[in-house]
Structures are given as C-alpha cells and as structure tokens.
Amino acid sequence: MKNPEEINLEKLELLVQSKSFAELSHEEKEWVSQWVESGNDYDMLRKSETQMRQYFLDSKVNPPTLSTLTQLTSHLRKKARGQQIGLRWQFKPSLSAWALAIVFGCVGWWIGQSTTSPVTQSAGITSAIIHDTIYIASKPDTIVTEKVIYRDRPVILTKSVDKDRSSQKLSQPDGINMKEKEELEKLLVSGTD
Amino acid sequence: MQKVHQGSEVALTEIYQRYSTPLMRYFTRMLWRDHQKAQDFLHDIFIKIIDNPQRFDGTRKFSTWIFSVAHNMCKNEYRKKSNHERLNGFHINGEVNVDLHDSMDRLTVKYRLEKMLDELDEEDKTLLLLRYEEDLSIEQISEIVFLAEGTIKSRLFYLRKELARKLNGYKVVFNEREA
Image 1 (tube, rainbow over the protein chains, first blue to last red):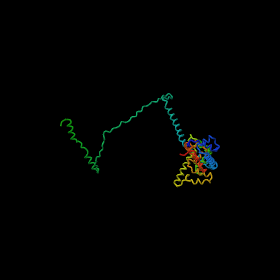
Image 2 (image 1 turned 180 degrees about the horizontal axis):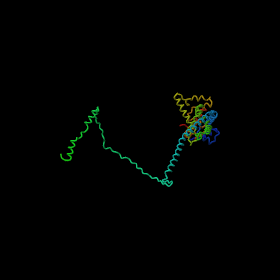
Image 3 (image 1 turned 135 degrees about the vertical axis):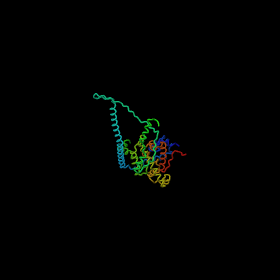
Image 4 (image 1 turned 45 degrees about the vertical axis):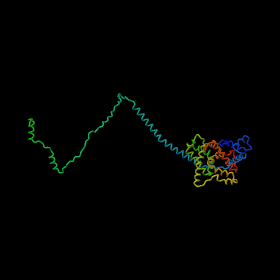
C-alpha cells in the first residue's frame, strides 16, 4: 500500500475534477491506480467531488451584517482615543521634567561661570580671593573617671523661730575672750609655755 | 495591521471587507449553521485584532494567521459543547447513526452533506472546509492547523473516501490492501 501521506493530492483532485476515468491517458490511469482500485471507484470519487463543490456553491451563507463593522469601527475609535489620553498623561510629566532639567542646567552653568574668575579688577581696587583654610575642630572625648555620688542626708527642721535662734546660738563656734587673747600673745612673744 | 493598531478605520474596513465573508462562511459551517453564533464569533475575532494587534506574527501571512485564530476559537467552542453534552449525557456520534445513513438514500445530497459535516470532528471539518470551500493550499492549511502537510494529505484522502461512501452509499475501495 502506498502511504497516503505521499499522495500528490492536488494532482488527484485536478484529475478527478477535470476528467472521467475513461478520459484519462494511459500514464494518468497508471498513476491513479496507485491510489484507487478501479475506474468505478475513481468515478465515484469524481461524483462526490462535484457534489461537494456544488453544495458549497449552492448553500450560500448569510453575509456578515453591516452593524458589525459599525460596532468594530466605534470600538477602534474608542481604543484610539484611550491611547491618545494615555499618551498625553505619559508625556505630561516627562515634559515638565525636561523643562526642570533644562532650567537647573542653565542655573548651574551660570553659577559655574561666575565662580571661575579668580581675580576681578574694578576702579583701581585690587581684590583677590583668598582661600581660607577652615579647621574643623572637634572636642576630644571626655572620659569620666570619677563619679559623684549624691547621698540623701536627713535634715532636722525646727518649727519655732525662737528655737531656731537658740539653735543658731548653739551651733555658732565660741570665739576667744580678751583674757585668753592676752595669754596667747604672751605665749607667742616668749616662745615658751 | 500596523495601521489598525494606530487607529486607522480605513485599514480596519479594508481588512473587514477582505476577510469577513470567508470567515463568516467558515464560522457558519463550523458552528452547525448557527448564523447568530457565527456573527458573534466574527465580531469577537475582529475585536481580538483591534485589542491585541501585537499577537499577529509578522512572519506569517495575515490570511493564514486569521484563519488559525478562527480555528482555535472553533476548537474551544467544540470543547465547550463536548463538555456540555457529556455533562448532560447527550452525544451525537456518527458511527451510531448507521441505520440513519441507510435511510438517507431518499434524502437530498445537501442534507447528507450537512449531516456528514455535522458529524465530523472539529479538525476534520476544518480541513474539508479550508480545502474545498476556501480553496486554500495544503501548505496554508498546514500553517493554520499546525499539522504536517503529509498528515493533512492523508486525512483529506480518507475524508474523501468517507465522503464518497456517505454521499452515494457506495464503498469506494482504495488501493490500500489493508493489513
């Protein structure tokens, strides 16, 4: 059996459409017999081919309605409009960003230009730009080695004013009287007891 | 396609005028002659073109690409229908209706052909329609259904054999000496 995958279908179809088995040449009959058993089978194939093609010609399918194209056109219009709005939104920030970038660029260039002239002369006064050296000093770290400890101490508070005075008197250190002073001076002058 | 992407209505109209009729024909035959469904499918395929133009593979011919999209849409519809029938316990099988074929002699060729087309599976029907109604080459069909040319030739060959049998009640014996 010949593999149907190797068939020259176009050639077979052409022959079937154009000629009956009787009309085929000797070579054509030989070629056809590779695929079809008999002349009767070939003619039956021919008949069915004609019937099928006639069927497709006769049974016309309703044409597409016009409203479909109208709907599609309006859909396309909507989509195109949507795209345009989308593009506008896309370009808006980018344009403003470009404008900002240009403005910053110009300002930067202008500042750069103005600082590049080291010496400026005007009306006989010479001025020169001196580059000051700025030392940035930082305090050394303070290391606390000692620690102050505060301790609570109870304080006795007196209620009356008199008591306060008496307590002040008591707490005052006693001075030396005149007699004691004299004795002390004598002692100092003599150097002996 | 680029112009359609840019929103050109003229380009869309041009594509529609060129492909709507063959697509409508294909959808109507594929979808059991349901004109309304075919109309919906036609609408949907053009919406796909408008909304996702980037899906068009520029290396392929537009005609084969659009038919392959249509073929995939029909494939999904057949899958849906088959699931629906399975769930409802209803399925039409061509082989079951052998008695019906015997009584078809009195019926017209048109009816028989319609019946035969209805009973074919989605892929075989596509092959027949693209070949005998749309007159596409084997190479073009191969690009649409993503099958090897040899496979398409073989399947069309057996379909023709089946067609001759069902249309004329005659078993065409091909020189194949079945093993």
